[in-house]
Amino acid sequence: MTRTVYLNGDYLPETEAKVSIFDRAFLMADGVYEVTSVLDSKLIDFDGHAKRLKRSLNALHMDMPMTRDDLLGIHRELVRANDLENGMIYLQITRGAPGDRDFVFPDPETCPQTVVLFTQSKPDLADSPAAKKGIKVVSIDDIRWGRRDIKSVQLLYPSMGKMMAKAQGADDAWMVEDGFVTEGTSNNAYFIKDNKIITRGLSNDILHGITRAAVLRFAAEAQMDVEERNFTIEEAQSADEAFITSATTFVMPVVAIDGKALGNGTPGPRAARLREIYLDESCKAAI
Image 1 (cartoon, rainbow, N blue to C red):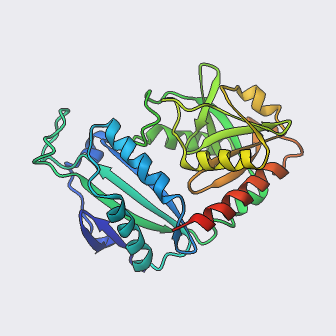
Image 2 (cartoon, one colour):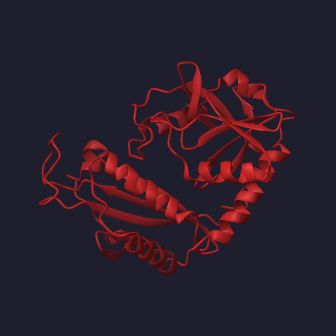
Image 3 (cartoon, rainbow, N blue to C red):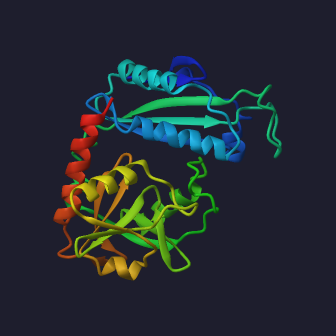
C-alpha cells in the first residue's frame, strides 16, 4: 500500500512527494522534527509534542508555520488516509530551500519553510517483544553539540551510536560526558535503586522528553521517589533495575549495561509497572 504523506500543504502519494536538493535540512541539517505515537488510531501526548516543536523552532529562530489545531488536523487526516491503527507520525520542519547553498540563513519572507509529515505502521508498538525481555545497552562517549535540548535533525552521531551498540551485540547505547550519563541515542535514561528513580536533570545537555515528563509524573503518583541528578555508568550497573523512555518505546526495561546484568537479567517489576501505567493513562488521554 502506498502511503499518503503531507508536504507543504498537500496530501500526496509518497511516490510523488519531492523535496529540493537545496533544502537546508539536506545541506545543513537545518531543521527540527517530532515523532508522535498512534495507538488505536489516537495520538499519544500530541500537545506535549506540539509545544516542544514550537520550543525547538524558537531556539533556531524559525517560525511555527501553522496553528496547533491545523497541525492536529494534519495528523488526524494522515491517520485516516493511511488507516493507521498503531504506529507513529513523523513531522519535520526545515528552514526551506533557498535555491542555492549558503551558510547564512535565507530570508524567511522569500524562502518558505518545508513541512513534511508521514506515517509508519507498527502493529506491535504497545505490545513490543523487546519490552518483555528487556534491552541491553553499552556506554559510548557523548561528542554531540551542546544544544541537545533542541530536537534537531542532526542525528548522525546517535545513528552511529546505535551501530556501535549493535557491533557489541547490544540494542542501544547510553552516552557519557565528563564521567556522567547524559541520555540514550534516542531516549532518556534511568535506573531504580531502593524504590527511587534516578535520572539526569533537565538542561541543554539532554532532550526534554515528553514521555519522560509523563513517566516521572506517574511515578510520583505511584509513590515512587524521583531524584534528578547526574549519575555514572557504575551507579547504574549496581541498580535494581534500569529503563529508557521515548515516544515510541514508552517505558523499555534495560537488563544489562556494558555486559553487566541487572538483577537476574530480566525486566524488573517496577519498570514493567511504569510501562503499564504509562500506556493505560496515555491511552485514556489520547486524542
